[in-house]
Image (cartoon, rainbow, N blue to C red; front, side, top):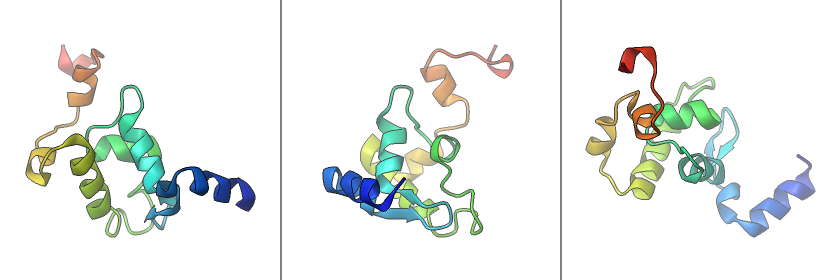
Length: 102
């Protein structure tokens, strides 16, 4: 993406200007998109799989608290409740079954 395209995106939605993960260059806008799209993320693992924060050099040491804060705010849950969203809950919520959920 060119600098002009990036600046245009930020002018349309300032969330794309707030860097959440410095290692992977992930913005708050990208995290919000991963949450709100169809079959959106409902856990830290879901966000990590969809847009890669926490996959860089620091392994989430800097961005995980920010991603947790965004998830809690957008889903209307507490951090404690977020920790109880286990891997696989997203698949069950979407009606997707996998061998370990049969």
